[in-house]
Structures are given as structure tokens and as C-alpha cells.
Length: 228
Image 1 (cartoon, helix red, strand yellow):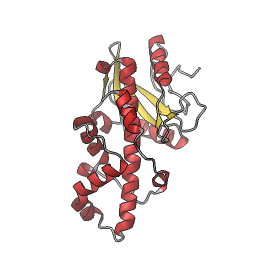
Image 2: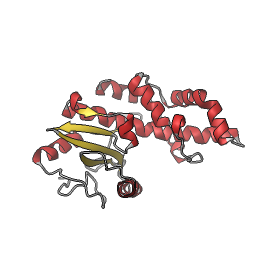
Image 3: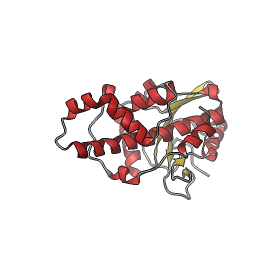
Image 4: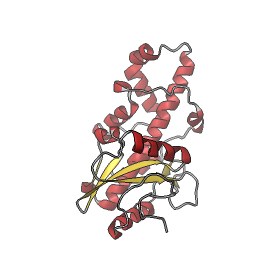
């Protein structure tokens, strides 16, 4: 999948902001029920580009028996709405990470950017191999809540144990910031080329050395990096 083709696909999606606010099914979906594993299988291995409703129907049809057995919901309609919202948010984040991954390939070369489900399980969204150094990229929204969990995982769950330099690459939902997303006509936000070009510039200059990970920043937080 090329970046332009993927953005064309993103433009076909219909956002549902109401689903961002429904959080009634927040328990872990582990093992075969892990939606990230299913998305990885569909998008990366089978190259099946499903919209939000299509993915929800695919997931429910595939795991209907397991879901009923695991959760045994008393109100099936409420459960389905909560599950749909949960899957919507998971897929939304997955697609944002995938666009960043494809953009990184465009900037650093397709042969130098890697991702797989095992890296994801260790908290790394994708890796950039550049000048024989591994840069482990962490994608998340630039909010106090997200920074708290990113730093908590760094300190307590060893997500920075993967070899290489760990790079926080947060994105801002509001406009006017250096790391703001660019919004498509349907409201889906994508990383900008300028953001990744700045990342490459900081790597080339030697500024990007290590992540301290104890503060918030509008851009990458490292020992000597700050946005212009």
C-alpha cells in the first residue's frame, strides 16, 4: 500500500464522533479477541481495507460465540454499542499509526521502516533503521493523559526495553501547533510531511540522542530536542 492510496482510502471513511464518547466496554480484549491483532491480520497481511462499520461486522461475526461466552451481557444492545465504540476507537488509532508508518517510509525509504505485531506488543508502533541506528517510534495523541500513560509505561512496563533510541512522536488534535494533524475533508487527521522531515533533520543533526520521558512536550521529547 502506497501513502497516496492509503490517504484515498481514509477519505472514504465516515467519522462518528459520538462513538468516541461511549466507553461502556473498556475491559481488556485479549488473545484472539484483541482487535489490534485482527486489524494487523486484515490490513497488513491480507490487504483488506475495511471501513469502521465493515470492521465491526467482521469482528462480531468472527467472534460472536466467544464474546457472548466471555461477557454474557444482560443488555445485548448496550453491549453491542459499547463494543462498536471500543472497536471504532481502536481502529481509528490503528489507522493513524498506519498513516504515520507509510509517511515514515516515504521520508526514510521503504526498506528502512519496519513494523510487526510483536513490536506493537512491546509498545513500539514501528521502527526506523537509519545510519545503522534503530529508532523506535511511539505514536499517541499530545494530551496530558496520554503523556501520563506513556511515561507510566516507560517507567513501569518496560516498553522502552526494545533495542534502539525511543522516540515520542505525539500528534496534536487542535490546529496551529507544530505537531498538529492535517485534516482531510471528512475530518480524519493525518501526520504532515513537515513533521517527519523535521524528525529526519533532528536525527541528521545529532540532536536526537535519547528519550528522558519525564515531561510533556509539543514535539519529540529528548535530551536536546525542541521544536523551532
